[in-house]
Length: 372
Image (cartoon, rainbow, N blue to C red; front, side, top):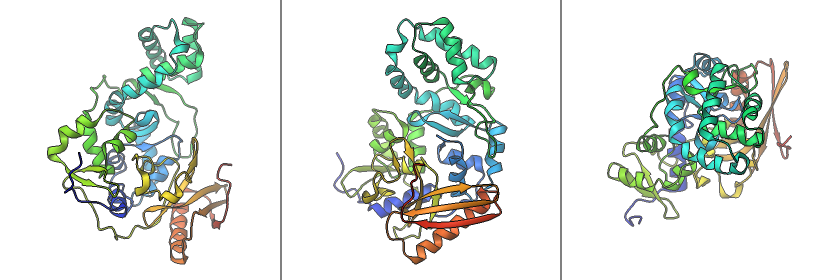
């Protein structure tokens, strides 16, 4: 039960706490690798978003800094939280992946009908040998596995390998300004590491609160893709502080974590599709106003979003050619002249760093088909 004496945090208070911990109230002067670890990874469904996430969070960020970490294998692209691809430090890739294995097992169960007669332990062993011999595309891996199980569903064979093994996407996939198909090998092979024990749930809850708190048990479960985490929070309760949101939901937090004044200014920030600040809670009203629920994406398609005063206020799209780059902003409501001017300046700064085009243009539109 939630204590009736627990202080109530307004939506704005939760917003400012989250913005501060997400490095979105002011850009942080910290190394790129430290930021990736502090944020417990960057959502990386596509290859470019991690770079834009860091631009909006770090002082003086240059895309080459993240690419260099990927090439030196200090950060990697791997399926972890919510069974989606994230950019993690090597250390987190090795320990977070086994922690979220229950979610991968649930995903695999959906495909069991296509795996009749398949020995999953043998499949894991064979797939490991294949991808450690040389990185393989998923198509190549499926074809090799079908030699051993010709009657199995090919897609299910690939899903089984992906769910059972900690597969990383090797470079040049994910490097800035370069392209490469998805080729996979095991995290241990790529990082020259023996298997590591799963991260402690207690440690990850504390790190989550440091990056996303104050938050509820349900918030954490949504972020991690894990279930039945109440007992972990209860075990940690003596060392935490608790609050309530405006709906009476109990929120946990680190005692010394920053909780800025709700009126602290929050400058405009351009976020790419699937930014974790938009996905890190079950109740997302601390960032997405109720009136705009569902406006930042349709189905599995997400749009770039603009935060103004800490909240979702617009969508954006970058159209880039060799000689010209255009940012189109579609406001979801009335922005006002001062906010439009601040958004324009933020867009100009972003284009100067994140594109090589010599000419830039910032446009405000009443309607743009962001699904194109």
